[in-house]
Image 1: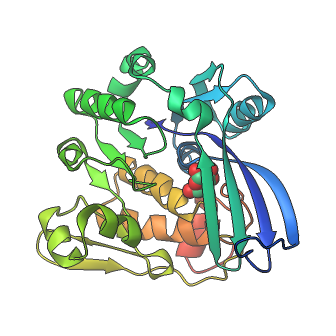
Image 2 (image 1 turned 180 degrees about the horizontal axis):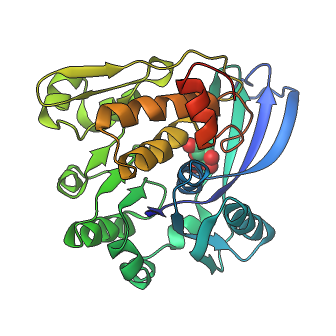
Amino acid sequence: MITVIGSLNMDLAVQMNVFPTQGETVLGELFKTIPGGKGANQAVAAARLGSQVTMVGCVGEDSFGDTMRSILQQEQVNVDAVNKVSVPTGIANILVHENDNRIIVVPGANYELKPFHIDLVKEQIKNSQMVIMQLEIPVETTEYALKMCKAANVPVLFNPAPATNFKKEWMDYISYITPNETECSQLFGEDFEQLLKQYPNKMIITLGSDGARFYDGEHHIHVPGYMTTAVDTTGAGDTFNGALAHALVDGQSLDEAVYFANIAGSLSVEKFGAQGGMPTLNAVYARLGGFEE
Ligand code: RIB
């Protein structure tokens, strides 16, 4: 069983042929409101692969919040700990252009997730095989949850995104950390070789379409990505994290799990929207076996 403690956003996504420059107005190609938020995305990614997942977070008492909850339920994610609060549901304004995206998040209800909400799910956390967290909820809540997981001996997969407010002392509470290259440079500096050696089998740096790398205690391991044609890369990192947690809980070794997560990530970018392309287990196996589902 996996517990995700994190954000739920309604993504307001616009696909465009050209990003506007300052003061410029351009025409977009497509607009969609799609469920997102790094927490909810990672919950859906793991659930679609077959994990039993509980989401812990906050939405507003509004239609976006209701939609977020019901979509998660449709994905078989337990939403008993998705609280309704009197602040609007978080949103993300997403501009999608070719293989690139630009995202502005307005946290809204996500910042109402407080330590007392974590206390309410203490038993759930204790019974989890893994807890997944990101950085779209308040720092005090993140720290509180990390300490609770440590005390209960529950492994934490931590995705330090967006790379703000991270505290290095949290590394003692984290079992796996998955920065991308930009987040890694911002939080830890540029010397990846040395850094990975400092955190063997713990730090996994994601490299976009190039896959991911980590240090296994003896060697630097580069797990290559699966080449595909991307429609929308939004949520690829979230798919990687949800799939990594699923595979680790399933008992796969770290290199197997990273390989599995890369394949899941490659499938996720083939459709529009953060959750649109997140694969089922069959779809991942189909690609692993080199044939289509
Ligand atoms: O990682 C992608 C997600 O980041 C989007 O769904 C958006 O809501 C932001 O949280």
